[in-house]
Length: 339
Image (cartoon, rainbow, N blue to C red; front, side, top):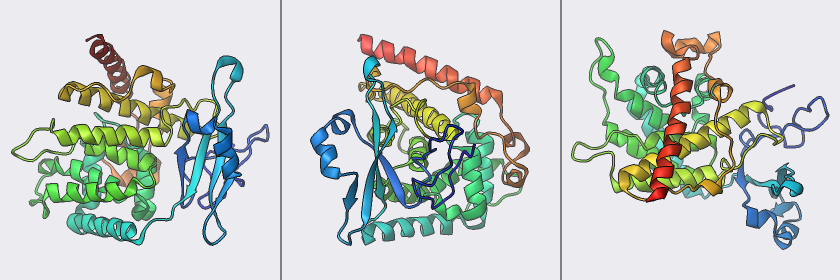
């Protein structure tokens, strides 16, 4: 069974399972973004009828498709799952701003980019594994500008914090806060088309190094955590994908990133004294297991040059730490709700 659809393929041309049902994707549709339709919208027959399965733009072209990814189960009270697959068409000002931020980030890091990526996966990823490692490195290896500027900037920035560990290296030729600001600037425009890449950027930018006169628990961090939760909900990570017609790698990554978002929300709540933005009845996503978390951690030989020796294969302590953090945050959630 083919797991990953070919880039540029239409939703109708993906591989077939042995039972003949199509394998769809919410992430790898070229120039399209999948937006989760909430329970109210997908059960509103008048709304669905008005879409007539497609939205036509001014040039009589198809701008969107409503596709069911899970049929639900009315006998068990489980609603169906629909996504609105939108064509990515943005205002010129947004495209210019994203390109400017991307160029600014790459200009700042210059030839240090690959070293910063290596430092990130050596020092940050083992304790905060929210990046899909093999997928990121494969794209960075082949065509890095397909990766959103916000995610590249976040990885460069967090990797920069360990630059002093590099023997014989001179001082980095850029200001770390300028780098993070370019990443934030791009992310604000990228929210027009949220996806798993951009959610990974959200999760990383929550932990950017604060200014010398500030702490990590600034009001900005709480507001950014709200953006992170909203991004995750917009792409439907709060809904369990187990029975959806998507590839297994995508199900695993969606579960992992939902619980990373949950963890970030609970800790942000504790740090700022505000109630969590995610409440228990608002999601159905199953908890992550080892198989879910170990996905994408082992690298093929052609990507190993991008990382150090310790980052080439799975470290089981990473998965154990993540699973235990979910358990801890569920306890914290209960304590918060008890007050």
